[in-house]
Length: 317
Image (cartoon, rainbow, N blue to C red; front, side):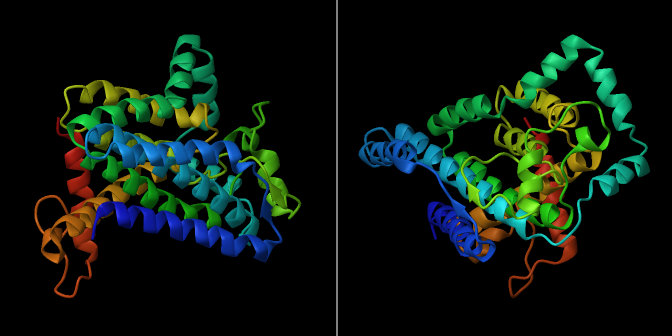
């Protein structure tokens, strides 16, 4: 099976799940699709028209379409999941978990804001995902197009893995919990969703606290750039982005740790799926993925091996 078919199938399943769940909560989406629809149609046409003569341009257009559709499907799914979760807000629990790790969130936040240059650097790093995606997608479209499938599939699996964390541990954010005088821009949406007052979704924001999708995205981007000449700058930028989620994204320390773990698991699963797509069942064995049992079931130890392999691949230049 082709990787592209797997990716589109998973995106479609996410979208269909959101479509099925929204009526259950009396929710709907009110978005003007004309502009974005036309833009996506142009990209799809470009991907098809350039596939033979300019494959790199086709890869770029195709990947951008996938990521846009994925981001919309994931955002809408997160909103209805927040509305459906029966669990109480877990901000106090997450703050207590930080304390277990010995992390003083307030001290970190005010130390960062007391150093203007460092704060500005972290703020820029936190907002760097779109630019990083643009650069890496264009580069690998010409050099190694398989990395584009790896990125998109990894993002899909990461979204899937972050949803349970949001459902079982919904949270507003560390800014409100620690009363620093700043309110999270997404706080109104979260409270309205939980009160079943936000029934028509027009604009979406990132409302997942645990685990941090920004921290997970940083690991995915570092993994994408492995063994490239510019690996170290990408690594440095994304280490800064991981650090920035605390002060700039109102995340708890355990949110950050959770995001890193989720990304490593997603990378391990992604490598296994892509090897399976390329080589069939025999392709899941080898140095780049964990080993499967005879009937295709992975043991816990094998999954751990895959995670460590994923981490090792990231660290290779």
